[in-house]
Image (tube, rainbow, N blue to C red; front, side, top):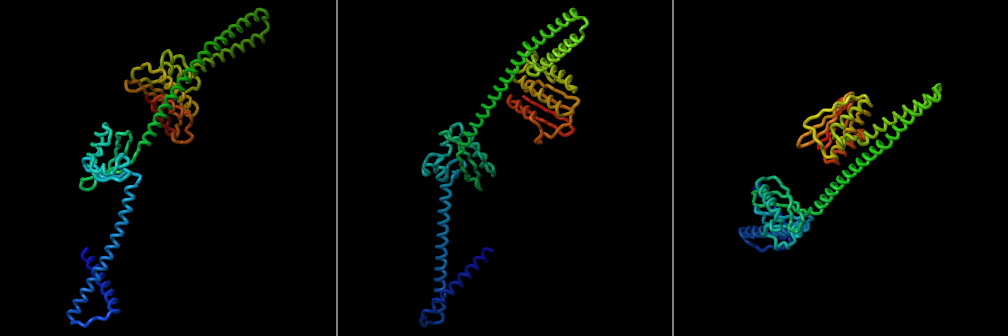
Length: 400
């Protein structure tokens, strides 16, 4: 195939030379010569024209190659990405101006030197291991180079066929890594602020619950006692005045109802059992009141040996259970809810599952309560997962 192509090229060149010679001979008068000599002269003239045509083509090709080389060199040297060629030891065989600028030296000073000489000593082992993996396999590889001046270069390299060298692209990722670290610090600060906010909220709930219980409940009890005394006095002073006695009785009943509601509010704000006895007794007490209020059966299950947890963690788990039960009462139509506490050395987990109507957790109408539970879990350093399907109930699991 190649021989045929070469032969066609020679034939085309011969035709061009013949045409050029005929055009040249039209304006010249040929000297008389023998037939054999004239044939030889003709061949020489044709060969000379062939050489001239080839020379012109070679000159044009050389000019195009030089232009392409200059363009490639400009693209290579002034690219925003550093490029270099390394041998298996990590010695620099070739590099562009951008890579030299990343390394802080002139290109002539870097060729033939080890790239590792510019790295932080803590990064040497990782760099050598990455080069070994790169030349041991044909797949591209990426790793980070920590330079001795504190900057970081991201390396994307591929070994050339034969395994004698590799071509590497270098990108300075110092700014992006610093921004990522700053974002991580921001997330940590946000988490700390969120935890402090939750702690402040719980303290305020505790204070408000104590004030309601200590002052308002006591005052209501005193009012009930006074009304009872007043009812006795009215009965002795006016035995036949049944309307006044009935009115006082109604007021007493209203006071007792109000006192019960205030006790329930105090318990919802911050159940005293949570502080004095721990999470399990607090959940059992709340589950009993929840069942009485909404008519939904709640079963508490315990796995592992119960233990007192950090106050903030106990508060977080109680609030998540409280929110889950409230959502269940509002939306699920469930008849039974199971609250499971799992205690172990490695983790603490809380599960709330119901036999209600279920829902699609990915739907836009999933509700704010789910977001509140997730946020509470994340603020406390835990993970919240929600599994539900329409008509198949809901299971909420939180792990710390």
